Length: 368
Image: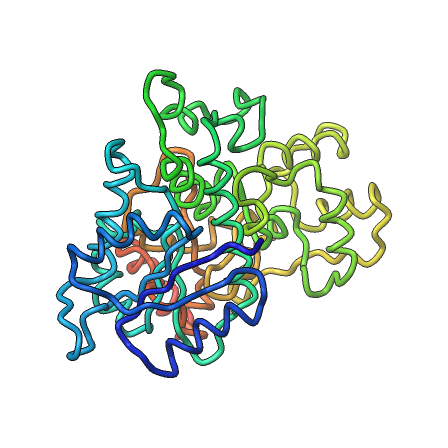
């Protein structure tokens, strides 16, 4: 059966129908719509009703319809639901909670309220051309993952599907080691998404993987897809892996060391990495990536968050983060090209304040 999501929005117009139909047309999840109620009645109703659903979608601003006597927003509802799960006497079900809104509403309030970010498993924007297929796959994965977590007690090893966690930074699994401290489904879900998926470190996403292997995805065509198949043993296959493609960095390092007869991935450049991969896997059309404009290094290890092109961190500028990075997480970067020429189009993306002097210095040198 398809996972069922309840979608609560204060509006009753074409935008709400578009969200519902966008998901339902993909046929991966089933979405039904309701308007919000008085806060106390809403919480009471949801605690009971959500036992029949696999997830909840909330519009960020639920108090914009003057016909409804509603004086709260999505974080208020999410907070109450998260708290209710931790109280055994309430017997509430732990489910994924998804946030959606227009970009203007999201930026105006949500982006400034960091305390509410951990309440939601995923957020998407109502836009002109939403990617309902991608959104649906992630919500389907979240629903299935929460149901799996709810079915019985799980260990951290179960969740990430690795028995060799000693190969990982011990601080990653530290909070899950105490057998006497009960963990609810949300604890695992939030940790995997926010602390492992959203930043390079123990795991990396496809674009970062390509950068570290020195590969130009677009120029390599089908050979890139063939290479990904060869790297299947390095792919993350734990909780939510059917919604998020990630690869274990320690396994990538180990595999490259094996096929290169002892060379370290980080000590080679893009051309050397691609030459080794091409020879090992007989990929004649695998192409090495070239530096972004204004860069010269081919020792790629990250990407420019705006252009998504490979970048040597030494030639990049650290992205401003609203929360402090965990010890196992790595910074994100912007290229000078993105800052000086392309312009930062991705919402909320900007360089750290401490990088501004170096950026200005480069701009002045270009004028000479």
